[in-house]
Length: 213
Image (cartoon, rainbow, N blue to C red):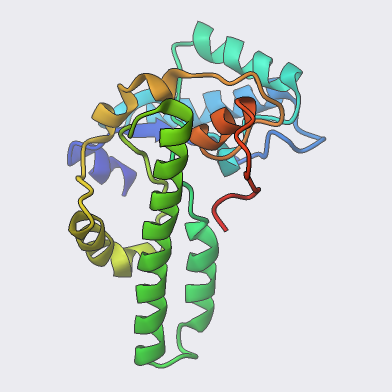
């Protein structure tokens, strides 16, 4: 499936082999990067593969030692971070949606999908507003969506809803070319949206965590 995405012209990045949480006390940064390397061996054969790393759980580590260790390794091995600007806990909604399959009727599931689309729009609006406070501009955004039943069933509605609100869909390569995604906030723990991390560093008032709930 991933190879088909690459053949269709999409960027394919690295998300590690084992999906370790780098903030876990039993996960050291050297263990983590070995896991990235293992995934890279397989992914290097996939069309569209680029050396970009999406951290599992959007978590870059709970200590500056871990964060700095992985950043040094990434730089020396030609990897770029692939952060997101908009996080909406779609994995949680996807889990609820799966639980209701075969239990709820079609009308209830339709209502759930509508609520979910509205939730994504609300979270996009929140992070875009936070970006204006932090960056003084509207950056090209990266929205994280997992491969699950909910997003498969809802993706056309998601695209239509965002376009109806004036959002424009652009290639990931164009979004990641923005300087926002090259920033490395000096922050521990480092997790969540890159915009949220920068807001914490700049001590923007009124922040809550997790911001996407």
